[in-house]
Length: 216
Image (cartoon, rainbow, N blue to C red; front, side, top):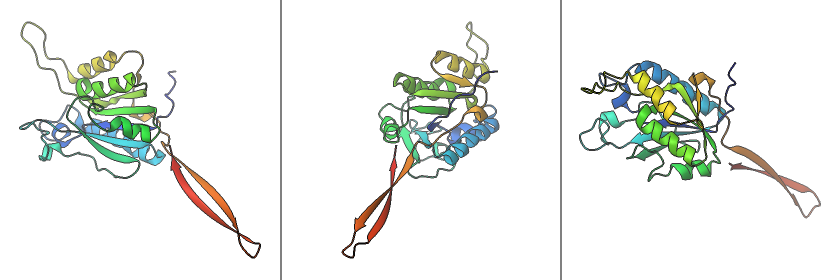
């Protein structure tokens, strides 16, 4: 039996925007993808892990052009200390964004990646995370892409599922691929430490004051 991966401290949700997961232009089997990603987000929140939603700013005229309905994130975001949105304009979610500093501030060294597109933004972001020495877990059923169109004299249509699998293979041996999103476990990216201070009074008694400090 294959051992399940140890828990991760963060979840990167890559480009789960309405243009890619709803309507006629949605990736194949978008309903399954959304179910798996929603499960990951819900369990990451429950565990206190950091959740980062990456939102792509596409060029003018593209389905994910900023301000258009397709650009909007499809899943609700609970903005707070442990959940945030980071906009990007490149495939790599780390390039010219605050992603690395956000992860560092939370003390994250282990993360899971999900979303779209498998061979583009998911691959580029996971690869950069590996290059930065993060431990990366990728659930096979929690990322997706489109079919690759046929190319005359080169190949027939490449099914989306095959393209996604090739993207996983391209990440090499360092990435941890698991079959199901349900196999990904989370742990808190933060701990809360309570410190009690005793102060002597003029009458010889003491008062206690407790403070909570959230540290990575």
